[in-house]
Amino acid sequence: MAGRKKRRRTVVRFSGGFHPNIGIIVFLFIAFYMAYNIYSYLTAIHIKSYEVERGTIEVNTSYTGLILRKETVVNAAHSGRLDYYLKDNTKAANGTLLCSIDENGNISERLNEQVTSNAVLTKDKMSTIRGFIRDFAKGYQDGSYYTTYGFKSDLNGQLIEALNLDALNAISEYTEFARDHETFHLYHAQEPGIVAYYTDGMENLTTNDLADELFDESAHNKTSLKTEGSVQSGQPVYKLITDENWQIIIRLDATMKNELQGGDVTQIRFKEDQTTAWANYTIERKNGIDYLILNLRNGMIRYANERYVDINILLDRQSGLKIPNSSITTKTFELVPYAYLTSGSGASGQTGLLVEHRQENGTYTEAEFVPVTAYYVDKNTDENGTDDTNEENWTAYISNEKIKRGDRIARINSTDRYEVAATAKLKGVYNINRGYAVFKQIDILFSNDNYTIVEAGTTYGIMQYDHIALDGSAVEDGQMVTTN
Image 1 (tube, rainbow, N blue to C red):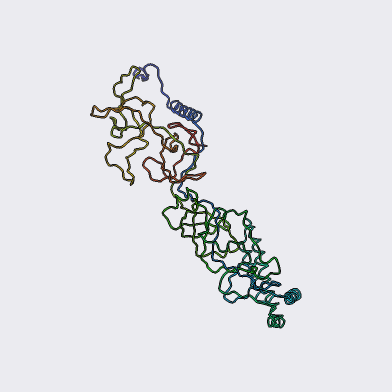
Image 2: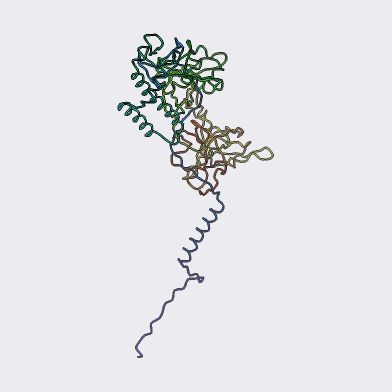
């Protein structure tokens, strides 16, 4: 085996004895990443967020109004027993039989006996009453239980109307005899209108009579005409509302007067049943009090039995980005001329200022480029809403801890200097889309007790679907946050 050669092994060694392991490197990277996230989570502020959505706030104000309308009170021309044949708050045609007065009381007694002994409704009248009950049952809601009392009164009125008319026809031979002897008198509607069986002494009021005491509901005396059963000559027996046009009068406060000034029509909502209506209006001032006079052309029959009505004046519906009031906060900014802003060198091209810091001895340091964000630019808008096109007149709202009051900013390629002194506050919210708080200025359109509508599409503001801090006072600009 003398001719066979031995093979040599070649061993490659790293100088210094270092043997890299990719597994360890990946493990250390993951561990560092997890530690960083745990640290960020523990040190970040935990807040609740709110997603910005488009929304609407309805502007409304509640008032109690005084109702005025054309009302004619009809008095009895005779004394005697009083019976009614048409239910309350019903439209009556010209010549409709409304009531009767029996001077001796004999016909009235026979009428009551006939109703008691022969209380049978015709098929047609029974169908009408069933339909009335069915309509009420379909529209009934637990939240409007108060309507049950009105339903009971209307149903009772329909029954009395039906039974009394049938009874009157059944004893026609007695009534004709009494009428011939002028002891029984029928009262018919002298013109079309809505019949109401009450008086309150305010039937003849007009807008010329407006006075503060008329709005005192506690002093309002309403007398029902159907409770006595008898009447004296000259006393009222019914009243007829002869015009569908009616008015609601409210005492106007300064804020609402300012809102309505210059207009002539507004929308109102009746609080009792939440129905709405449009009304033409005028504003009149009497004895130092401003009155809003709302003129309506329909719907009066629903309130024919009322002198006062609770309404909301619906001024407008404001639409935009809807945010909770708790998100809104204020932030103080330094004001600097917009023309002093410049771009830094390098690929980033950050916007900033050349700042000369004021020292304790009153001298200034060399100019240093400090990146800043213009949170808002005031373009010196005139009273007509037109922006000044000259950037020399614009003011930028900036905020940076490195810039203090008393520092100077230098204008690029110029010897001009501006001392930072003026500050101003802006209302805004904190945008937290990226895990840290960024102040965003807002333009408020309208607010109520809970929410605010802000303008959408502003240059320095928020957008739909942005996430903002629910509590704006709990965070600061640039602070790391996590959402609950």
